[in-house]
Length: 440
Image (tube, rainbow, N blue to C red; front, side):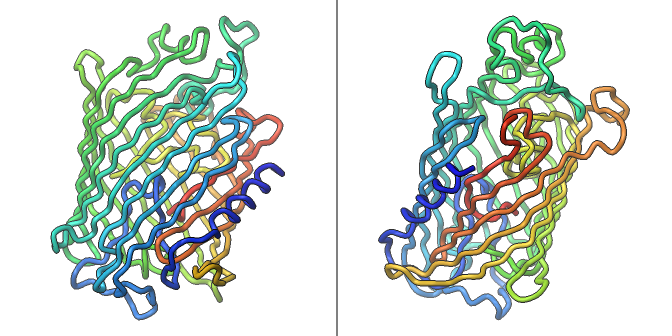
């Protein structure tokens, strides 16, 4: 933990160094957590007078943030996330925004020092493409995680290793996951604050099990769908309701998404093809002074031949890790639980308490207290032995620090304790996340 605190101090110091002058108010999320940035003001849908952000001054706002840290699971993580935003002529929330994320981590592994994770993402967001009410958000990404978690399917999947393991014991609950994505989200202004959303994604997936691992055993037993290299095509559609006061650091309003999607794996003999229904409901309420109560509920249901690597993801338009990871129940390791039906709830108290100028920049500092919970089921009998009995809720609790500068960058560092974090961090059952933007 001390290493993390020192790392964040270094991050803040680096981020506060000379940057071009920017505007005076809070910013919006920048990279991976905003894959389908859900906020936009369409023509005829003006923001309330409380939104005092500067949309008129013609300017480019660059910002960059070094990623430094890690934990006992991924090792030492380093990289950078950057954003470039164009403001002009009162266009809300901006004329365009472009993001770039480069990150990797190193850790001592069974074969020596190794790169455990690599993640690269580029995207551009154009809210009023060609002067219309159509918002375009294409993105290109690649990730390689050689220690991706796999503990089997079900809400009661065990983290206990068998007495005898063939292969490398440190890899028993891990596999090598590689995936490339080309994704586009198109949002069409309909009847403000309603929008129509269409999402298309092309993916290439290449999972690889380690000899003697849990995944290798489940593949050999015929209990896993989708264990092969394949291309997946995804088509989704639905509705968005957005009444937030602003999309940078919302203080009031609501943001709801509901959609359906279809996924087809190629070649056809991969026997992967499924449908999904998902809803994300979020609301923001000021509760006194600068404090905001933010709450979100998320439900995702998958039907058909779902590949195992999609059993811990969901979402109507962009992909969320569920139910563990940085986007759902923080503190629960990513990939710890897999299932077709997932429920997640999040509650946060957020605030910005300190504003100051440094080197011509306006900065805002604040933080949040968080509580997340969720559950999943492996099938729709809701009685599968793999799901256990009783309520079976997984949970994480903690807090974080926000740093915002200008009108184009929001960054946060959060720590969340969960009993399930012991599965990957036995000496420190805490998940720590260095990310961009608010989670929802």
